Image (cartoon, rainbow, N blue to C red):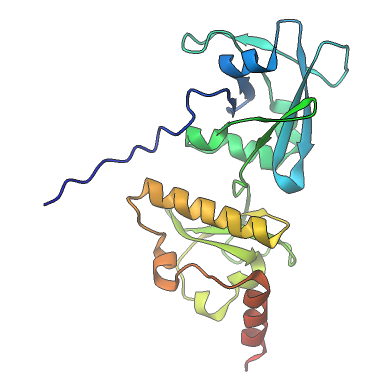
Length: 239
């Protein structure tokens, strides 16, 4: 039998790069980033948000901005020279950010920032931060995005994209066995396709290359969102 290399899911490219990470109640700026951004103990940080694009920006200021957050030295032995600040206020108002903090894999909570004028921006991933019961009564009719179905044990059995409620009532899914839906609203078709692919790939990385159960059965669609919706309308019109 041929040897198969074990692929770690707790390590990732760029782990020694200048990075910003999100933990359960903090934004963390590692020492390499602090050096790159020229952060000193005199600085505070102003947080900027771009919800439709799932982006956060950080602007480091010395002026007395009433919206600025205090920076605290990050004294972890492995990262001397870094800084951290509270994220609780942001989490309280923006569930799409709080959802990222709840992701279990550190690689999904660690980001390589890019300079955008005076702001250092990071690109978050939609994190399925919204949820509904199997019937989907609480899902807005027009909600469009990415979603995953969870069984009674909390295991992901399907990852998809499109109009979430419309896809839920598709005839071929009525016999599927799942108990909960988790989803993120994503505005553009390109981003929906991008993030669906991202999370399918992440699932495969963590499950030995295997797809979620119903993705194995039904496959992952190559249809555009408009084609999916048209097909769903046809199915609904059938007697």
